[in-house]
Length: 95
Image 1 (tube, rainbow, N blue to C red):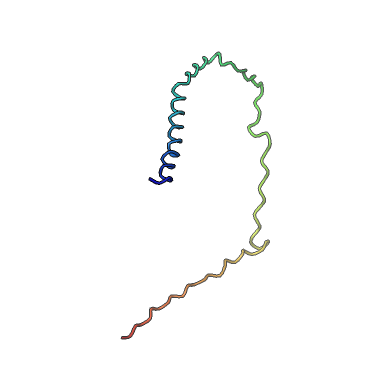
Image 2: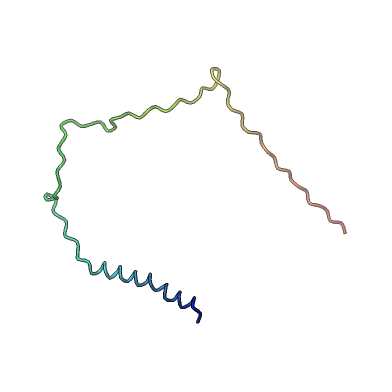
C-alpha cells in the first residue's frame, strides 16, 4: 500500500468521528425547559397607545416624471438598426 492511500484512510475518518461526537453531544444534552404560560411570559408588556399612529410616518418621495413625448417634447428615440444575417449557400461538389 502506498503512503497516500494510508493517509487518506486515516484523514477521512476525522470528519466521521466529529459527526459522531456532535450527534452524541446533542443526545446527551439536558432537555430544554418548558415554555412559560401565556400570562407569565417574563417580559414587559407594551403600553396601549391611546391614539393610533399612521402606518408610514414619512411619506415616500415621488418618482421622477417620464419625459414628455408628442408636440411639446422630443420625439421618441429611434430603434437601433437591424442586422440581417447572410444565408450562405452550400458549395456544389463536382465529381
